[in-house]
Length: 217
Ligand code: PCA
Image 1 (spheres, rainbow, N blue to C red):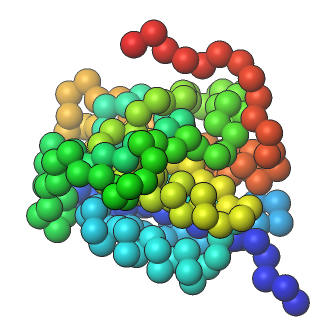
Image 2: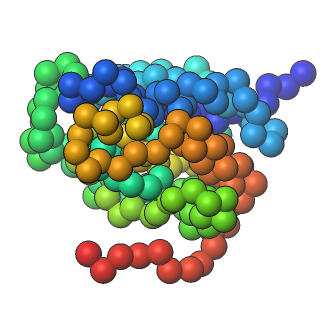
Image 3: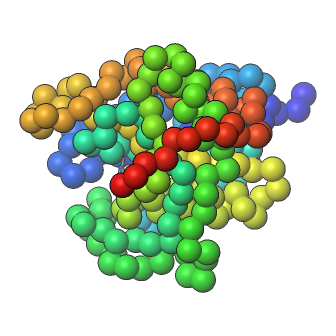
């Protein structure tokens, strides 16, 4: 029997003095689920520039996924934040979990300045909003480890026929937001539901929709 096509779904370890990372909490809950004919393989990446790259590359070798979806915490954001773009920059405001703090270094030397997500971001956005889940298209994944991993996923996908990739940032969980005044949060249930909806759209749609979701700032 041939193996089902796989989705590699990644979350991150806690960073910046947090005890949990909501990305791993949510991603982990989807491990082994089926989305259409695809099998979800959830894996944990370290919040560290160099190690996340090595681990991501070996996961892609091991699972040969057709879809890569990275998920990361963006404390302060209020919505499921579907990233449109990843840039070829590492500019770390804080040290990563391995103590590295690259400043203005490329993710991939001689790589393109940026990659656009190859998942149908507007169709994903519409499906999430239709389900009553707060979501948005974001035009920056930052310049820390999440952008790094998003860029690497798209760089890897660019050299594998049929492989597509994207990234979603998620808010704090309520348990984290209680410690930060005015911080928005989203329940794990809603994040898990949102990620499975986003994956379903990614699996079933190769063409995106066309409607405005841009910003003026
Ligand atoms: N968020 C960080 C890195 C790991 C995570 O979950 C970021 O946005 O870069």
